[in-house]
Image (cartoon, rainbow, N blue to C red; front, side, top):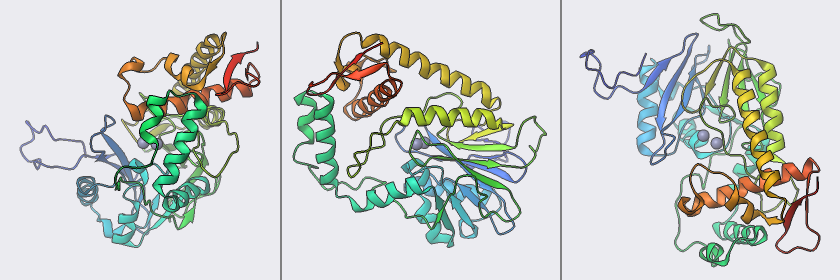
Length: 360
Ligand SMILES: [Zn+2]
Ligand SMILES: [Zn+2]
């Protein structure tokens, strides 16, 4: 079923028809809105199995989003109470937000990769104050100016009830390389860390319904999107001082998906697309360019904050709002770590906050 909200030539279409797309071969998608977000919606996939529908992601935890999801399932000829299982690509609230509510309504299992399950557990156990202390220390170490750090001191001003503060604990683990419990279907977990440490893509190992060339279809979550680059920052963890390399992980994961060469990509935002290897090449080239530009900036020693201010973003630094600046700092540090790992940039000995400089 196509989205027919404009409906001028289709007087039969109901006014509030839920945005559902039939992708063939027992797979449909529902556009579940993300309130006040430029991304617009999460594509929740409904995969028919012999035991009832399995959802790939669930959408943002909001009453309006829930209504669209349940209406969408009805438009697919099923109901939320019939859902057999929920497979979650990663822990972000636009993907995992409604999983708990779907489980309550249906008794469905929820599956997530162990690394993102650990984040869910930590998020549920960590008091907001602890996050504020951690973020303050991180920003100070990055060389952020006092006027940026000051608002974080003293912790949250009021009790926040942001969605995602109490995400649902999964019942099952998505084990990389193993088939998931979808009776009558073949859906395999492919671990693609980078955007989050436990991000997975899900490979539907069945012939494409329109017989497009390539290997099956791939639910790509946020890993591979047709028109946007996913955020790759640090894997923030107040209890773990391991120096990870999320951008290195992401680039490796991109190559893995390129080699898989699925016939069609079913991403969690925007729209379905083909030529995964071409899209992978574009993204690899984009990050290569970004790393080269950053390397050139580091002819003089710069802190993480100074790097973030100088890097190219989708708008000038002065126009980037507070919260997005923190995300930019995290992304800048992920790029710096990659260059350090490649051996072309090093921290300046004794600098405080740490400055980085090109050594080759
Ligand atoms: Zn995400
Ligand atoms: Zn997303």
